Image (cartoon, rainbow, N blue to C red; front, top):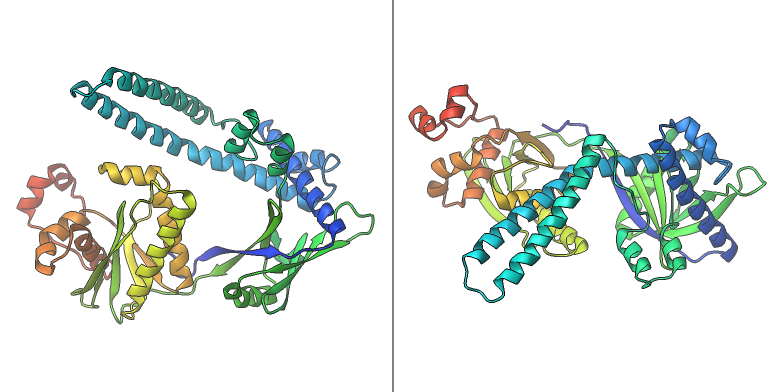
Length: 441
């Protein structure tokens, strides 16, 4: 079960209003120096330098401010950790692609299609390329290192190589952000402070590290969406820590305000509980009464999330999750039971593996956790053993449900503490090995 009082970080995005030209130039310079310092510090990390050693080396070269350079070090450290975490996923993705290409070649070999030899040859070259790439990833994974990183995105780097963008545009893309980590002891944030002005406007004071005057700050006004204002203003009044990232996209400056809130929602079962079965193309939900009996069920579809752009995919997932939670809340239910979260879960179902390897499973679960947090819905994690099989055998026909809705039925009952029983004779035939080990249901 997720802890009753867990914390979650929420990020709200606002837009800076036009400001004094001189201050904007200084802010751009802070961004440029910060990003250059981050790249420098990343190399020092590779050399084995600790934070203090690396920061002391970077300060005279970039920004002579410990706060900015410590945050740049954290950013560099995070980028390395992220790459290490992604390596197994890249390898899994390529393995799935290679398996699919081999299957396609087998079908082509037995077909009577024209130019099949040419198509097979192309697929062989793709397999060769993917295999070489996997060997490269595997080398870094085994060695505990990461591939060479390209700041500014690989796509822009390709455009630079093919002279589709200028060197100035490339440099601009590599020097477009500054980050300041929150510190409660420093009034929430030492280098970038936010305060509420009224309506949907916030004042932002950015420490100017290039000024001879100690503590001098650049002043900006940031506009945030109305729906975030109350939460942000209330949070700032507490004096708790918050982090700020300023990001330049062409001529627009975004301000990402991140705050950590505590979840006080606790599982309650007065009106029952909802069970969720997550699948590659849908979220199947079944609601049961407190006594474990069926109440309602619905399927929320998330089609095409692995074939659309990242922004479109995130929107589809967000809409499906919110719609699902609103439906659950319409029954007065505020507790959701689902199988244990495994962002890289191995599954015999090929379509599920494709979803997991394409980050969709991770996106859905993270979106679900965040949305439950905001809607004060408690999450319970239960063991997934045989939920689909039990649902099919016991509830699918009697309740007129799909296999996934039936699985959600089982997960909901497990959230209430009910144990499902299957005749031992049937279990021993279908799951001989598991039954011998005494695997729980």
